[in-house]
Image (cartoon, rainbow, N blue to C red; front, side, top):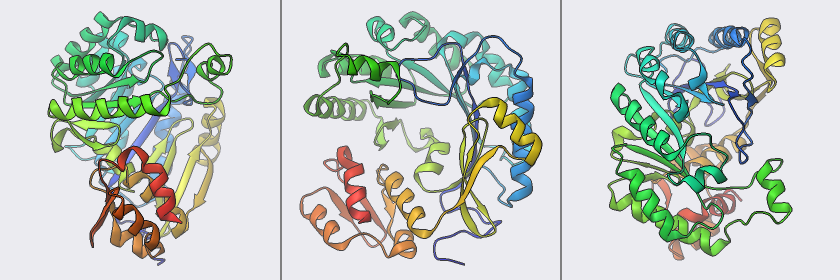
Length: 388
């Protein structure tokens, strides 16, 4: 077996999870470049059947079992009927021995809060709420359909179910100052939540925001303001008891960290089903990157014809595996497993590593390589240099 490649039937060093993508949204946000479709009230039962069949197709091809997480993302999976979510969870449990204590996350919009109790009863243990802002102007700018009051009501509705709660916020909005952001963030952290994903606004090609920037109708934060906003995020979260365990993710204690996302960041294995979903699985002792057809009809057809929704399945060599675990792992406060990296490609570029250590950007031990607070804002650049 090649160094660093997991054998079939073994649990990846980073754990094992399942991702299911539901592509439909009631409206498409102007900043979004995910694989989403406008939900126009059609019958999506064929897609649900295809996703469940795709899970079965994966189970027939890999031996990995004992999943610790199921993440239903999108899109807006809170548009799904609770009975359909229950079927999806049951299939994951039966096919991949989803553990009784598994983290089962569902992404949801505040306007679907009337569904939360039924979704929790269907088996959801964690709600990821797309609040995105706690200011009316911010919500309008981001193209969100809910109000601040409705967002707060959604947090209350999720809390009442007893499930874990995470909220998403976007900062770096047009004209937003670090002082404004600190106040808004402090209000969010006082809502009784235990997890926050705070993302700086990025302008993705092909989105309405990208066209607005190109036409001069929208401003983006420059590097100095971006750095100030990032620092404000870290300081405000830390003061409220939320550790930045990943560059954009903060949790009130280890138990509140996203178990599923840690699978990604630690270089684990996951099954990816649903239109456009990506996966990393062990097949025949080789780590394999899968990507499903993005179009729901093409995806459904592929599942019917081949048993899986894959558009591609690529065996990854050690260099590709190392690149992924370093780019993802350096985002974590705990850093990258240095011995695993060494087993894959020999480890980091020694001269670059020494330079980053000397400049106070990296801390290296025999077991790990991790970024300092000064290094975290430039994680991608450091990772690229260390990979050589």
